Image (cartoon, rainbow, N blue to C red):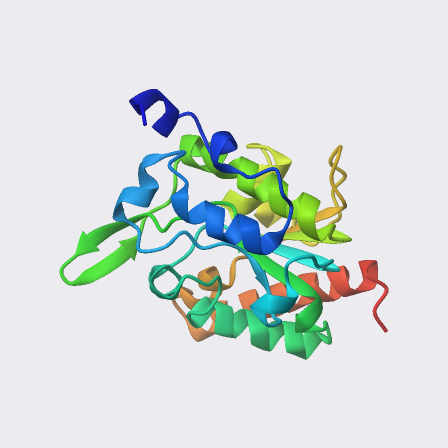
Length: 221
C-alpha cells in the first residue's frame, strides 16, 4: 500500500455493505490515518445486544464520543471503561432504554502518549477526525438513528462545525442537512475529571438534564 493511500482517509476502507458486522471486521484493516499504528484494536460502535443479532439494526438514539480510551482499545468495544459506566448509570436514571442506544466514537483508534507505564489520552487532530468521518457516516446510514447525541466538544464539532460550543449550546436540538436532529452535551469523562465534588455534581446534573431533553425529543414516556 502506498504512503498516499495510507493517509487519504478512511473512504477506501469502508465497505459498500451497511451490515454492521461486515463493517466491524473491515475497520480493523483501516489505514486511513496513522493512529492504527499504536492501537490494539479499531473500536467500532455497537448496540447493547448480542453481536449475532446486530448485522442490521435501527437505533433510536446514537451517542457519539471522541475516541476509545485505554480499556476500550484493549477490549475492542466502545464505552466499557469508567466513562461508559457513568454513561450507563445516567441513561438508566433518565429512563432511556439502553438497548435502543447505539454508542460509537468519531475516531475509531485510541490516540495516546506514554506517561510512565500508563497510556494517557491525547486529543485527536482535526485531520485525524476528518480521516475517520467516513466510518461515522456509514454507521449513521446503517442504524438510522432518530437523534444523534454528541458527547463532548470533539464529537460535536465533527457534526456541527468548528465554531460550535458545547458550553453554550448543550441540550438544544441542532438541524444539520442530511442528518437527524443533533444534540450535544458533556462527555462523561469530563465529569470524572472534575476537580471538586461540587463541580462533579453540577456537571452530572447538566448531563442528566441534557439526557432528559433528548428523551423528550424521542417522545419516551
